[in-house]
Length: 352
Image 1 (tube, helix red, strand yellow):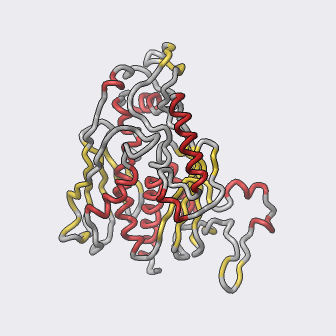
Image 2 (tube, one colour):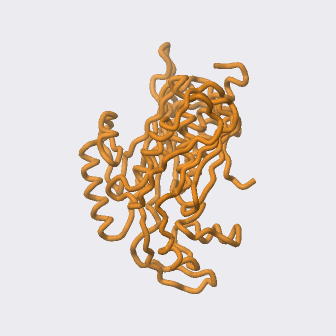
Image 3 (cartoon, rainbow, N blue to C red):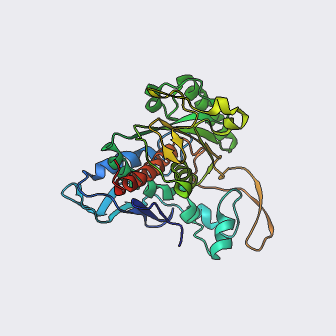
């Protein structure tokens, strides 16, 4: 009940609101004797925190993590790990002015319909601030995956209609957008500045590659690996589409084109995206993710208030121009959580 927890053997629960005292996560099922420090978690949190560059919200949060339980003398103990990240730079004033108005594209209307009450400050639980707990938990999942030499890499392939034409992994961490194409990154910079001046926002596409995943992860039928990966990523606010492997291109293929031939060295291509029958095959897992534009735009919009009376709204406050690139470590975290869970499930049946 509640929809705030995710996973089976490796299970996370996130908590907190955008303008509350803090946000955080509780992780259950992490194996004992895994080396873990606050620095391991902090390096991932630093990748998603606001205020780092163009198009990013000017909200200044240190996002310093505190490990409250589950770690002793630098090692996990096998007991629940509780993580706390305090909210330090809160300004609810712009939200108080519109507390009785439903913002277009936001979860205001749906939360009110479900609960009859909502925390209007910064979007409350529906805010992207919730993803801090996911990234913190994902850092622990990544520690588990490191032991099996499983790595996850995500990067921006499209922003505001500008597409990366080449994939150079060395370029990803050299630009703000985490784009593998330097020329495309420069064009994205100009595009985001142009849209920001207009008070509008941008969507985009990111790709995620999972390397080193062994064959055999995933469950048949309802807990297929790609289904759980898609659910994990789609549970992030602002995600509107997930493709695996060739994705929607398969609808235009013949069976003879779509099938991945097998040879003595393994699969000879990878349109399957590294998963068949819901189970990993040992090839790279490839996922593409569509991210919608941030709904908080500084332009007049038609909406209604709680009494369903028409209103013309112009919002204020501090907002990103695009969820990219800050959503990239969030997607990586959810993929890591899914893979850690399935890895432990595979070990539980005596495999791996």
